[in-house]
Each structure stands twice: as structure tokens, then as C-alpha cells.
Image (cartoon, rainbow, N blue to C red; front, top):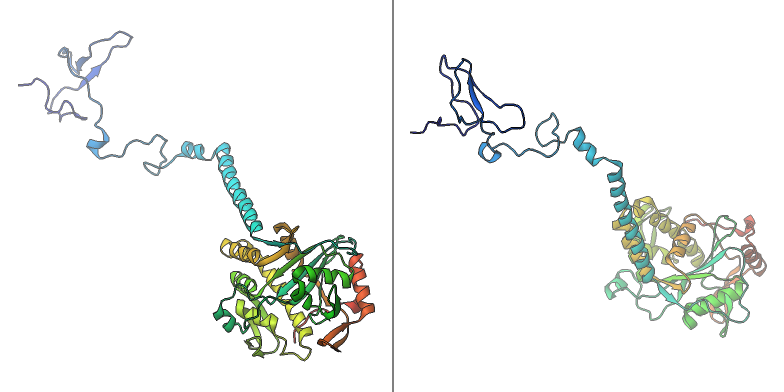
Length: 407
């Protein structure tokens, strides 16, 4: 029979019987190893070799959670107290986290820039030739919207009432002048039926230049008849236009009259609409709804272009990666630009198109009869002054600014 109590190994004291003596363990001070002695509250000496009190049971036996390496807060175990939180909010740790976040954002931004820049379709459009105008003040963009059906399916051609036409013609021709002096940009529409001299082909409607020699001949023709040096070129077809509008979530336009036209496929009531890609294409193609036909269509195109670029550069789109990146990717893949144009230039032109002064080349006769059909004859004196003022960054007189309005 053992001389040790049954629960000597447990954390706790056996229940003391009435009148039992209080027992404690005394460990002598000093560096020498000493045998602990059991002391009684009385004068009795403890039995030699008495066993000292054991450490508490571990967490596995008691079910208590393991001790945290951090100081616990008064709210209970596992909560970081003041010293624990201070470990996480040290300035050095915060700076390290911010540096990682900024590095990831920069890497994503830089990567996206080079990806989108690589998607641009570049062509040798702005070629040098004898007699090309000299550089002027500011920067001039030639913006074309061709009627190319590339990118549209057969079903979409039927849905959007475009039909199928091979190749492409420049249904939309605009010149954007961005002044060097920080003045307000000027957006000038060039009627597609303008009767001009196309180099190498003689007099014809200006949109025929695109059909004869593509964007390079159109750019040469524009520079020849305006005397402006064109610094940059961009063109977008029907398919790319539809995708961009859809990717930004549509573009809001408010109509002052209903528009219905079988040729373009437009069918919109009076009032405000959020136009999807197909409706927007019909809107910028519609000319049969107006007595002035193409001249009013040009104003509608300028209004829509302004609304589209305002939407694309709005915070609601730019801060939403699910809108911004698809729209930018669609635009980059759908645009044809000259070889010197990069994504940064396109961002600049997008900002310039948010609120430009708008006008049309001055016209002397909108129904000028020619061998190639009814054409548009420019007012040569006023057109010359318009382009001279742009070349020299001179503020346009009011009579040369027709503006843009809906009918």
C-alpha cells in the first residue's frame, strides 16, 4: 500500500478533515540544492522526502484554450490587448503594406496601358508628299467614321439595317483642333458630299477618297483642301462603334422629336433614352428624318460623340473596372490610327472631345449639282478663314461657329 495520497499528481489539495494541520512546502533560500521539507502548523517536522506540489494540468486535460503569446485584453481570452495591437499598427508595418498595395496598383496600371496600346491597329496613313502643309500651331486630328461592316455578324447587319457593303467609305469626317495655347478645342465637321479635288482622281465627293485610296488618301485630300497639317488620325467602323457603346453601358441622349427611319432602322420616341450600341448606330446614321439630311446628321454625330466621350471619361466608368477595361479594350481593338499615335494621345483627344466648340465647314450650296450627283459646295472665302484661324490658334469669329443642336 502506497504512502502517497491518491491524488498527489493532481492540481489541488485533498479535502482537509476537521482539525487537520495546515501544510506548506518550504524551499530554503540560497543556491544550494535542498530537500524540501513539509512543515506543519504545529511543531512537527515533515516526513523526509515529501513530494512538492505539482504544476497545473495541461489544456488537453482541462479543455481550456492554450495561452496566447500576446497579452489578452480584458474582454476575454484570444483578444489582443493594447500591446498586441501596437505590434500591428507600427508605422513601419503600415508603410510596408501601403508600399505593396501601391506597387500592385502601378503594376496593374502599367500592364493595362501596354496591353491596350498593343491592341491599336496602326497604319501608314499620314505619309509625306510634296506640297504637304507645314506644321502649324496646336495639334490637328482627322477623325473618320467609316461604314465598314467588319465585326458585324449577318444577324447584326439585319438587326441594325446596315445591309452588306464591301470595303468602306467615310460616312463621318471631322477635324479636331487642340490649341497649343490651352484654349478650347474646336471640332469641325466636313460634309461627306463636299465637292473637292481628290489628288490623282480629280473632283468628286470627298468620301470617295476613302473608297479610292483608304485613309491615307483621305488624309492627303483633307490636308490639300484645308491647308492644315494633320498630326494624328483615327477611324472606327460600325462593329467597333456598337461594341464600345455597349461596353460603357449605353449613352444617354434626349430627343426633342420622335425619330423613325427605315433606312437607318431608328425608331425612338420623343424624350430621353439610354441608347445601346444598335440604337446609337442608327442615331448617328439617320439623315432621312431631316430636311437638311446630312448637315443635320453631322450635328447629331458631334452631339453623340461628345456624350460618348463624356461617359467614357466619367468617374462612374473610369473607377469601375468592369466598365472601364472592356470599353477601353473594345475601343483600342476597333480603332485604326496612324503609326505615331499611342494610347496616351487617345486619352488626350478623349478629354478634348468632352466639351469642344463645334461647327461645320462654311457652305455656299448644300445641293450643288455635279457630274457625281448633288454635292456640297463650300463657301471658299469663309472656309479659308476658318482653316487659317485654326492653323494660327486664332479665336474663331462668331459667324464661323454654327454649333450643334438637335431637330
